Image 1: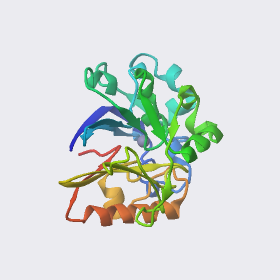
Image 2: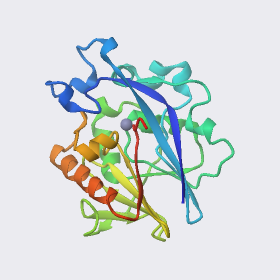
Image 3: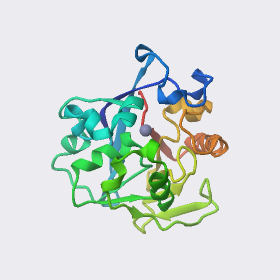
Image 4: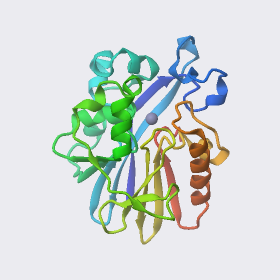
Length: 254
Ligand SMILES: [Zn+2]
């Protein structure tokens, strides 16, 4: 397999986003009542991979729209909580110009993952039905962005080896497995990409960065804290398997 990191700029957020223990207030990650100068820059990444003949993009990062009209594109609430910082040419679509993409697989539908979908047309986009329902209900969190897309939902099966007992073999050949993880959001998904050399995990915001899963640091936005703790522990265990080729987080600094 090959995995290419596509960094679509940055987002300026409260330090409570990657680490909820930096503040006492539960909703500190929204950035409300905090000085802008105290915010931190977090990279916004998606991953382009080729495995067993499939070309796949996992998440879509920021759209090229954020370069010109960030507030109009995101709406004030989302713009305020996670301000995009990106230069022209840094969107996934621009960085992947001319590359084949068979499918786009979403780890979840937060704005810094969904925004870039606007730049792509004619490609099937997959997520969980749990995430589609959650995004339809949580309008403050997801805003208007998610409305324009026709998402395909995974058909999850019972799987005792999955972290939350549900998985889907995306292409039916064992190369990409989607695991349902009700952690950061109700329908978050982790992808396990497998070939003869071993496996890699693309974990989205189940771990903003390596410290999240290696040290068990909880992020700010959480759907279920106990599930997140369990999931970070599971990722850490997987990372220690001899055939684990890597763990790819959406906001890893390295
Ligand atoms: Zn994110």
